[in-house]
Length: 261
Ligand code: C5P
Image (cartoon, rainbow, N blue to C red; front, top):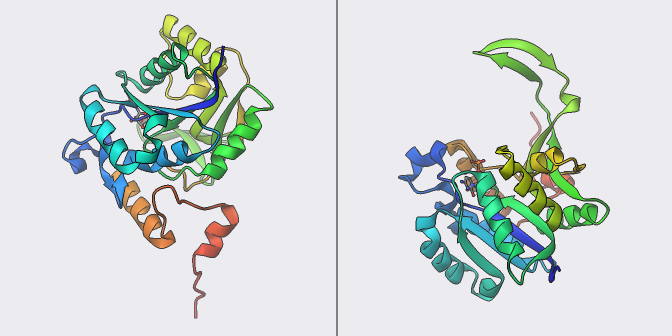
């Protein structure tokens, strides 16, 4: 029996190896981004959302205590809505552990969101759009169209030109009916199938996943240059934690476009 409508899993248990050289070995989700550690940005948006009743954060085992302190410092008003657990050795394992935790708790939800902690600029508008779509179906992924050409390569040699209209770049949050995502993960675990996102796991389970259009601004911090872009966006828009606003039209008007003289 579900006791709450929606919960969110924020996956923050990676070691951030691609950025480790720049962060002194600190997993990237814990580095400071302007006013707050990176994971606090998306955690705040999830916790503030009125329809998300519980947020479970996966962190590396040795970061559990520090993560709890940061939640107490930055989100004292949402402390009771947020729980922290140790994640697994892959993203999929982290999500699986969180799903089993929710399944055996009083917080077993009807719907569950899964979000990467390293995408700081998710908005409550995006969460609303996903929830709306989810109420019509079983599972939703966020995705954006490709603006660049796409080619298959091998060792830097171009093999095939692909039709970019057939592809999307996948983002999180993804969301699904809780029982569906739980069973899909249990099946993937039994079959020892490893995926980088939850939509793949649901698709492999035989269920249709619907796409909701995301935004380029909901990008994942992976490389050092992503941090520069994130910092510039915060400064330009005067964003603060929990106050991130954009949609495709006001993105443009927010920038002063200077004409050539
Ligand atoms: O490595 P990748 O970019 O796919 O990580 C996406 C998200 O999954 C990150 O927020 C990362 O912290 C999280 N993750 C996790 N447990 C792992 C590996 C990654 O929660 N073992």
